[in-house]
Image 1 (cartoon, rainbow over the protein chains, first blue to last red):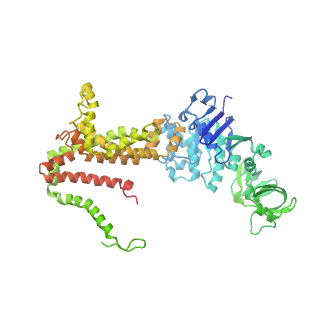
Image 2: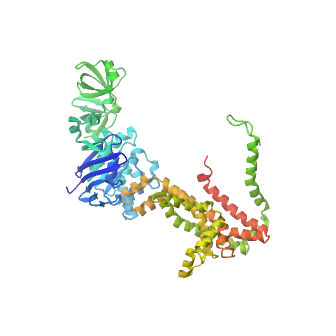
Image 3: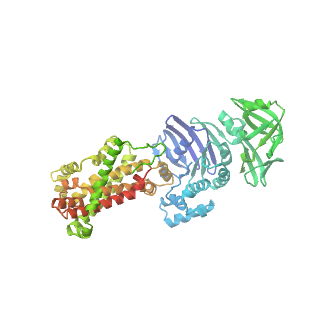
Length: 351
Length: 269
């Protein structure tokens, strides 16, 4: 492979033994997902050159960055790799524009030229008005975009994002997820993000690599993973209800079924509903929740004290309830059940 | 003055505590008050502009600034190494660096003589190869001041380098910054307040240095007689007023430094 990322890394760190092989062509986004402690961040640090390898090779666009057997290690500062850190890590003593210009300045670009190019990036990310501010004055979403601009300004062949949305509160997350998806798509190199959030992974990435205990347990598209999940974690991960639909004013129409959503979007979209956000009732629920419909209980899957219920009807959907709640519902296959979903629990992103 | 009764506070201060506490407070307050009270306010200006006083003041300023500069130039890299580079004997080296903090300055002066004196280990080589003699010269006074002042800079800077968030340095590296650029553009700006405080402490210590200087550099007016040594000379020759005037200068400088550092060191409560 001439372009893109080819990595086969072996890292030992504390009790973790990470062994991962990856091959990602340019222009593709891969999400490395897995539970805490699976080695996601360690993998990202290894690719960035911040973590020593015990074995293996890393090749980016034909350049060997690491080759333990061959005794080669390109230090972090000489890799064409950009990193967006989980906590953003914007330099608190520098203004926003100088944070973004940092990568150019240390490469010897004159100050005026570096500022001008940084401003172009800030403008592209809708942050032109923030150029003169200190990072402390930014909102979480703004800081995230500044961190992205700072990583992209040197046009790296590999862009690494560590839990890019986890530092944000819920409302900012939805908006930032949409804009991040746009910006990632315009980056010509390899994009690799690390996340524990299945919605984030599904929304941002073309391929998923599932990491558990330092090993890859499964890889593929969301659809491929959903078709045959190989572990409980993957099942949970892809158990997210994913629908393709068309967004209008506060609604998404999915094959004739209209779902009320809180996020603003237009055109062709994907809609993700976590099973835990799907509530089941024996009778039509009171009050005025928007998304309420009657379906038919299908397969009931019990795992510990959680029960997953596939509900047929106008919008086939999977619900996850506690065993106690399931018992109370006295579900029987084919029996009627009422479904409700809060609009705020529904994630919407461009398809 | 009577303490107001507050919930949780003792109604009356026990005499066994109040007595010694008052003595301790008096021990600090009385001498300073006496110094201020004895100050020859009317003749202050003429005392301070007296040629010997002016020479001592100028020499003190020059020597202490040189000592501070040397402490920064050599002490910062040492602090960095102690904070960031693991090597065998690091703990021992750190302990040695801190010795001048507690060592009687006279002993420091003797040690300097044995090392840099004309017959000292290094002094002989300096004398033979470069014809450089340190004892009883202004350079010697600077060296003595650096010896006692540098530990203040080193401990403050080491703590700052240790406490600095290394993740910012990693972020800088991924953006293409090499070691020096990381230090100059990230570490230094982030630790700057602590480093400045360390340099200020070192300067204050250098300015007040007496024992090591008089032992190693002697007391030659115009060459090694800094303000503290001049105060000593004035007292010896019975010119109390001039001694008090110069002492006041040192007191004012100390109080000023205390005020500048207050937020960092004293005002924490």
